[in-house]
Length: 314
Image (tube, rainbow, N blue to C red):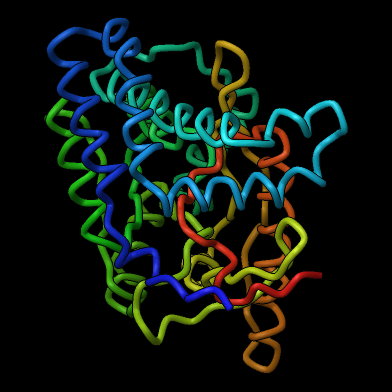
């Protein structure tokens, strides 16, 4: 029987945080193009020494493979695919740094931008539910450059705050409100609801369970097995009493493309059906996350055993 790993929030961020600092140093010293050339040895080091992350990458790609069209399955098999998975993470980190300095490294297509602008023009904000898929920081940078009134990112660990500190070193003037919470309490909900009512956006990822021991989770099918998803993002969205969208930014060829799709005009949780409705929300989210993972197989970045809590194959 496989030993259960620590919760993701207690795992060392050695690879991602140290790697980001190295990439940031190279970027500031040498510029984008030379820093890009240095990504291979940096990533290779963490690939060789990061056994847990390497194993998690290979497990994810193995689970993803049956859901891909036959011609694509070979591209996610073997150690090379896992290395390319980590290389994609490194390349995205470099693109984030460039974006945070105000220089988008690649064109960004946002075909549904008008949908989001229409919502903001109404004077009321929205909740954007995303994932550790693609390059979410590119969308935050784009929002800043386009002058959106406010983007509030809800984060659950000190790791995210340290990450933001590294990114802010690239551009101290970059505006991003980080709302750091250990659990989703009433104070946090009131603060975020005020910001939504002022026409701001609240961004929260829903593919990692809460760090609190009593964190509430629901299970949903994802890539052929049951996995745990947090209740918090959906409960939060219901408290905001505003439209909810799914929001992802994927790299496609030499460009980024932002995907925005309505999730609910408003999430309403009835007391008598609360658990069932939360399960339905998580299942819908997991289904769409699976769809986008299949569109961009190497762009989902959860380098830990995502299915360890259940391990129940469907």
